[in-house]
Amino acid sequence: MDERKYIDDAVSAFRALLEEQIKRQDKMAAAAVGRGEDGAVKKEPVIIGIASGDGIGPVIMAEAVKALRTLLKDELASGKARLKEIEGLTIENRLSKGEAVPSEVLGEIKKCDVLLKGPTTTPKGGTLESANVTLRRELDLYANVRPVQVPGEEIDWMFFRENTEGEYVLGSRGIEIPGKLSMDFKVTTDAGTRRIARAAFDYAKAAGKTKVAIVTKANIMKKTDGSFSRICHEVAADYPGIEADDWYIDIMTANLVNPAVRRDFQVFLMPNLYGDILTDEAAEIQGGVGTAGSANIGDRYAMFEAIHGSAPRMVEEGLAEYANPASILKACEMMLRHVGFIEKADALSEALKACMEEKKVVVTGTSGGAKAADFGDYVVSKLK
Ligand code: IPM
Ligand code: MG
Image (tube, rainbow, N blue to C red; front, top):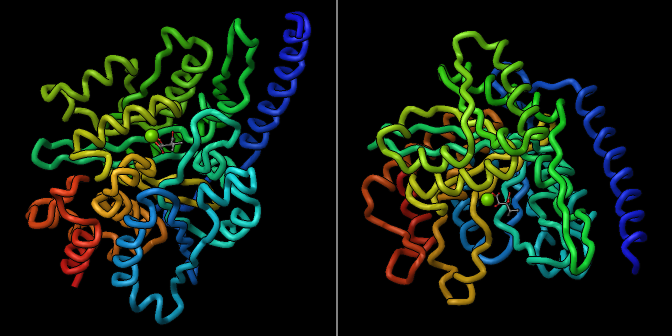
C-alpha cells in the first residue's frame, strides 16, 4: 500500500475515534454519580458472581470460595446472599469465540451485583483484548482501588487508579504504518478524570486522610496528564483540609523504595497505566503481588480480583497449587465491605492479618512453600 493511502486511512480512523471518545465523555458527564454516603451497595439478596479464570485462577479462587462459604454460611442459607458460578471466562472459550468476554458470559455477569474474578490470560499481540479491560469498560468500573499496608513500617496506602481510559481505552486500536512507525493513543476526558478524583477525595475524607498525591508525568504528557492534574486540583478545592500534591511518576517510583519518605504518603490518585505499574511496586513492598487485592468499582457494578495475572509460568512449571491465595482473599474482604457485610469483612481482615503475622503456613510460590489450600484452611481456621 502506498504511504498516502495509509495516512488517509489513519486520518479517517482517527476522526471516528475522536467522535466516539467525545460521545463517551458526554455520556459520563451526563450520568448521575454516587452510591450513597458510605459507598456500600445494600441490596438483598446480594448476588456474588464467581469466575475462576485461567492459570492459577481456579487454585486461588477455590480458597476464596471456601472462605466465603464459611463467612456467609447463614446469609447463604437464608438467601440473603447468593454465589453464582460464572462459566466460560476461560482463555479457551474466549479464543474459540473470538471475544474477550463472550457475550453470553457478559450477560450472566450482568445478572450479578458484584463479581469475584480469578486472573484471566491475555495473549501477547494478536487482536484479543484483555478480559479485564473489556469488563472494566462494559461494566463501567472506573475506580481501581488498591490498598497496601505494611504495619511494621507504618505504611498505610490507598491507591486510586483511573480504570477505564488513559492508555487503555484505545490500547488495541492504535495505528501502524508497517516498517515506518506505530502510534497508540492516550485519552483523558474531563468527566472521566472528575469521577475518579471524586472517588479518591471522598475516600480520603471518609477515612480521615489529610493528603492525596496526584501522580502524573504532566511535564511530558502535557495534554492528557496536564488536564488530569488540573481537574484533580479543581475537585480538591471541594475538600478543605485535604492537601493535594503533584508528583511525577518517575520520582514517585523512587520514593516508594525510600523508607525515609514513603510512610508519609496516604492516598494516591493517578491515570490508568501509572496506577498499573505503581501498584505492582507497592504490592511488592507489602510482601509480593500475591498478597494484594484489588477492587474495580463503578456506580452499578463492582469486580474484585487479585492484582496479579494468571501466572502461566507457574502452571508450566507444575507449581500452580503453590500459588498464594492471599491476594484473592484480600479482594474478598474488599468485596464484603463493598456490599455492606462489614463485620464479615473485618473478620476476614483479622484472620488474614493473624495468618501473615504468625507465619505458621507460608506460601512462597515455590514447592518449598505451603500450598494454596493449606493457607486457605489456615485462614478458615481463624474465622471460627
Ligand atoms: C492489573 C493487570 C491488568 C492491567 C492486566 C491483566 C490487563 O495488570 O489489573 O493491574 O493491566 O490492568
Ligand atoms: Mg497490573
